[in-house]
Length: 305
Ligand code: MG
Figure: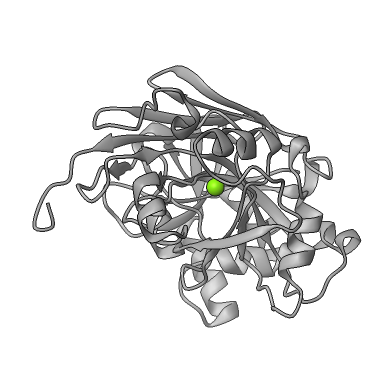
């Protein structure tokens, strides 16, 4: 059964793992937490333990839905579902033909990549749905990129594309927010893609069990309700199997690792007159079967204005 696994905070309280279902979030009962702690000698249930131990995930899901604490989903904060913030989020650039084409119109290379182009986003920088993207003064060109993220459940190295399916735990959405002017200034991608808050992830992780392989999903992105992007994951230049296989060559990938698979056309930098994100804008990524990742853009406040 497909599950939507969330990390939630209620009224500013500590993060808890929850199951999202029917407009509610179910978290474990105190007694279930107590039994888990006795059995594992560990603290509260972590997202990583649910990835590592499928039996615990089944038990947790059953218990939370039957005996857990239920809250209206609109009354909790959905935190970014990042299993291990000490690992980077691996990303692929230029992985859709129409995005390569719009990049070429904006002055970037026009050739289709012959191998996946990897870079990383800082996972500890991730924000959840409904959290603000800050429009830092260091950039005047904030762009958006709707992407599908795959989450691994196994430690893998040098795996073949045909082995990747067995290593996938689930999926979520990511907005690869990018400062285009900083990308150009520094002549690489890392800095412009890693300003604080430039990493919305969520709203939850959908487990892979009932999603067909390879996942053929449609993602749309709208700014203030106007659709800008409409991509189909079947159009990736390098599909998930190829991307994970290539990334794992000579480099161990860990359970909980997240790989963001690139975006399609419709970014601001591809427009004749780019409509960059500005304070007050609402950016919404939707994918049927996963959910909605919605963020708004805010002016900076405080010491680093
Ligand atoms: Mg991207």
